[in-house]
Length: 309
Ligand code: ADP
Ligand code: MG
Image 1 (cartoon, protein in one colour):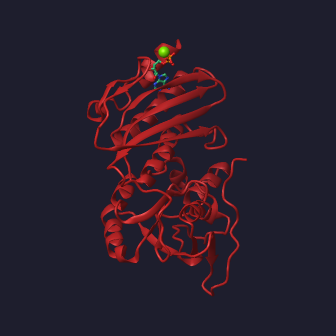
Image 2: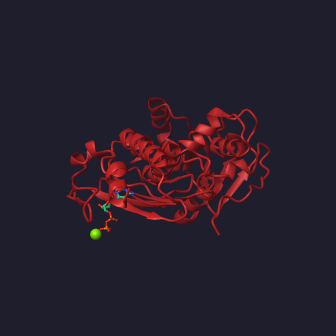
Image 3: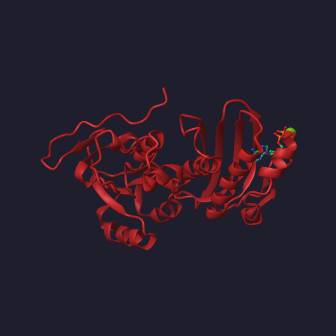
């Protein structure tokens, strides 16, 4: 099958039911996609590359690989409070395997349906397996959440549970049967609903990809502040306590944000309504870095988060 037919068969109608409502007039199949601009919104754009054996295991099935590659890109839109509009996909694969492509395109279809956003273009090449997903969403002008904007005294919150996905990855690597943790690694939930609800409440936000403490460090540096986290307050669903490594392992794709204490009950209401746990884990302070303390107030050394280089 030639490249043109592959594209036609596996990528041309992913999420196509949502093209019109997103203003996409020309989609997969032409030289470029053509979209009419919604004049009263700001566009939010992000791209993430997933590379075999770095961002996913080659033993994973193609449906999970596709779902995960789009979900982690969407997570950046969630952290901004954006509404997803559409995405493009640059796929590099080792060979043409029809079964694999069918499963891969199924993963795209699942997440396109879940977030009601279409695949509108991309590129297909041969080489070692790599998937780049560029997502675009929108927000009311000036409203998107950023890493900058925390104020001294703001509370620091985290959605969901930390450490589950990294435990899942370890289980996959060791061939252990650990269903719940494995599924939180394979199918991260992009917190789009939560991000949208935090607009006007959160003073800053980031999604946790490289590690809770590492990513919180970006809020600190962008906001010119420090923060103090209580290790015992970091939420985990795991039966064994989190190790200092697991706290900062990443792959959680939860939203870490700061907000004034006056929003506490509103935040609790959002958590209840969306059925997503949201936990206060500390406070923004003067300074320039993240300090983690135990119940005795003694500083705990946390392992470094993920870094590519
Ligand atoms: P060109 O050579 O003009 O860049 P391509 O042959 O690369 O065009 O792509 C043809 C069409 O298929 C374009 O509309 C492109 O956006 C789309 N496309 C290619 N690969 C993918 C993919 N993996 N997913 C979605 N759309 C794709
Ligand atoms: Mg062209």
